[in-house]
Image: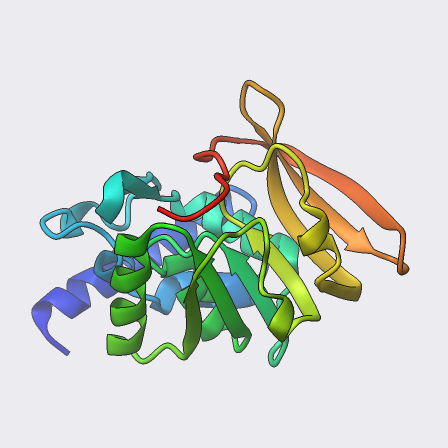
Length: 214
């Protein structure tokens, strides 16, 4: 292990301690945060800031969510090894890497061509087996449905019917829902063919979920 890798491992350990203090309790989530190299998923030159609990720039003028937000959303998913999970909004690939590290089978959709290419290369180079697609998140990925869980990493104005139809009964959709000011983190639990239970889990700030491709 190089000196840099030792340093980054120490910074990840400190980040994990901070997340525990902020209420993250899922040990599998904490282990993943402690082992996935976030500094590989941000703009070059910003590596020294990678383990601060802050959003940071990534290609295409977008941002990587702060680690607490990633941990919080992932904890709500209650990930189990071998589950099929659909991610809407690959970004730089960090959230997908966390899910893959936890043993999920990850499918991820990205509408920004630059990020689609960046995340695919980065995940592959780091050995994370994630299926990344260039596509419209509002449509999901019906050919691979049903999914055990769906995570949306951008502020949705509503929950698209296509996504509701692609989650298995008993499965979850975790999504920040936009109410005009910020977003309310919601967990939808599909309890039957036509019924979802809905839970609110606090306010967050995300970029908006946009239709179509760019």
